[in-house]
Image (cartoon, rainbow, N blue to C red; front, side, top):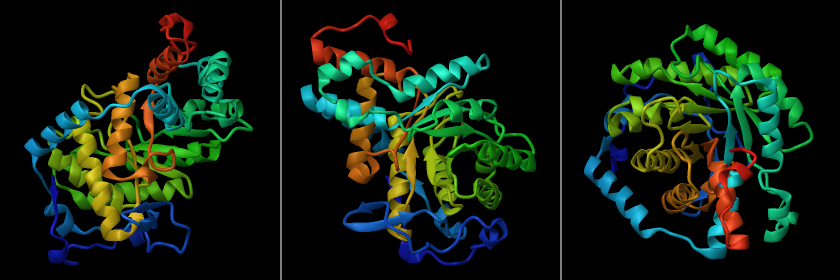
Length: 355
């Protein structure tokens, strides 16, 4: 679906934006974080912008759409296997509240749910007490980072802050970078940044690269997820190109959407982005994570996305280090499905604390 010609790539068009931004450099000698086709992969440190690589990207739209259709039709898990996959999905969640009427109390309730995503009675019925199932992170606006940090103290759950003028990403660059630094100082473990979509429409790849590299520098050691706003990018080719540029600039994750666009995470876009991640890993020896966000509301959808990760990238991408769901209502349906597995009955929505 993505067609590249690595043997013809050259260094023409390669810039020194990395050195100026200070975010991307040669991979450090650290431990592998993933494996692809038996090859160990390091965490992403970025590479200089290769315009030849970006311009050569092609996407076969009809093939992508056919692949997504067959994926849904032929992939299903049942009974105890389904329960296991749903538990894995919970551990990959960024439990999220990004509403204009958010309050400290709402964030504290969300953090309590993050610590104990399943009711204790259900945990006992499933016999999974020793697993200590928790979500990966709680995602909030900067205003609530401190609240979430305090509420999650003593747990392994990360606090993720949406930043850089979320969701439009149109405030001045320095203001967006300053917002990142404030969230990091407040205790955020992860930053979800928003790219300027206009750079993609105008083919301004150097500007997009420099922007993402600036944000990565502001993040320091904190992991950065680059939100592409795929519903706004119009074509799969734009999605693929933006994915490659964000990875070259040092993004630790690439993320589909803010959740505020009319169209958010879709399986066809997921195939395009995961293929880009795979090609980037094959070329650079570095692994980048993936986060679909927005519109993922059912337990069945969560298993479809997990199956996509397993088939396209392998089991290394089926854990929170390299895969996340941006979710709010998803946990509700997963809990109902697990209760049905344990008892043979579906509970009413109002019985779920996050409903």
